[in-house]
Image (cartoon, rainbow, N blue to C red):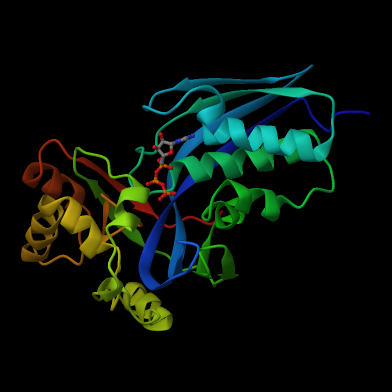
Length: 278
Ligand code: ATP
């Protein structure tokens, strides 16, 4: 067998949620969602090289697990097993997306590894099925862009891209997705999102009619998050928690908004991003 290429470079774009409705808790414990996913210009960078056998992973930056506990490693294992090629891979991961931040960093890395390995070791594998086995956000992140998602996040419908700039603001602590879902109560559940109205308001620079049903659970776990939200609102902004947080997304209302927020929130990770096609 001949390799299609010896090496692949992939950008793993972070995702934000332009609203997230928790519809119900399923008997198996998973929650059914309705959300709008969008990829943004913040990304990890991956370089994959064909090797005779095995998986190697080297990581630059970011406090993430090494070896088989890393989602990039697991994605490689699943792909190589499904594709049936005898070769292996060496992965270099440059971590720039904050970890456990609600920005889907691990899922983005997994999707990037699947894409890269498909280029090196082409095979008729069901990439979306492999992606879903790695996490609910991974199928969307295979292609990225803008999409409405239901189910546990895996049933995606692509939407026409829109432009948009956001400031991402993350307080100096992490929040584990599992803990936020565990803190949900049925009263936190809500109706579907008004997707068209959210996108229209964003395109027109108005405050979108969005909400994130995970906010109440996140605020119960970290009451300072509610105070941060209130402080951002007092600045005339429209913050929304991305995913399970603790990163807030704030539509950019002025070019130097990030600088203004850095002064207001010292010690926070603050970055301007734009929506980016996958
Ligand atoms: P999501 O919103 O997809 O639930 P998140 O953005 O909040 O996730 P991640 O940065 O993906 O969070 O990290 C979630 C957990 O996954 C962390 O506990 C982290 O240690 C683990 N993890 C495993 N592999 C990776 C990876 N390649 N990058 C980041 N985190 C990873």
